[in-house]
Amino acid sequence: MERIALVTGSTNNIGKTIADVLSREDYHVIITSRNEAEAKTVSEGLPKKGSYFRVDFSQAGEIEKLFEFIKETFGRLDVLVNNVAYTKNESILDCDLSNWEYTLNTNLRSYYLCTKLAAEIMKEKGGGSIVNITVSSTRGAKDKFSYMVTKGGVNYLTMCAAIDLAPFNIRVNAVGSGLVGTPVGYREYVGRPYKNERIPVGHIGNPEDVAEAVAFIISDKAKYIVGAILSVDGVLNISL
Image (cartoon, rainbow, N blue to C red):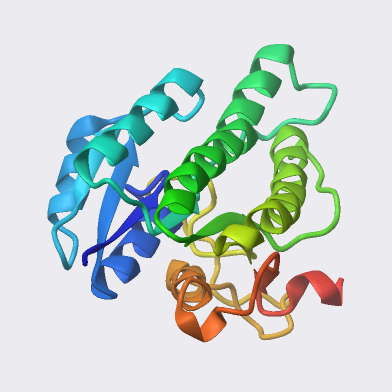
């Protein structure tokens, strides 16, 4: 039976690379974006042609429509990767209510809704795997106020959902990304230097490093890993 994977925010950067890797692993991948034409193009260019759906993850109603599409079209969901993210460089003093709500709705509420709705499908089909993309940092960050707050929430969402869903054979984990080639919010490579003396391994990562970690953690090789937050950061966080 064909395995179905949903990757949120999957038309560029880490999300697109995760979709590519899962497609090579023989998953039918559902590509999502606010831009329908872009989602269609990416889905058709996967190693194994996938599907696509236009959705704004800051809007709860649109997320619900996405899962109605999944149930009606496939009747199952084996893997969910919550990857969509929005960031604006701002301190708490610069963060207005509008940006706060948009960031939380996109980066945290969407993870909650997608996890809940995916789990309802997975529970009926005997299980599945959910992976949340977060940051490896366990510290605050200057001028990343609302973004970092949401990532802290994602970490606790991961652990709490893992406990709740483990009895239903639904494994929930997270992959925490360190510095990779293209920062969140940029569609194209922006010239972040590859060599970096702050990172003990001496360089930043690639989106493939995060994607391959996702592929491992959803595989049977990781079947006893539940509620983990796997850091993919060249040992940066714990060295600071």
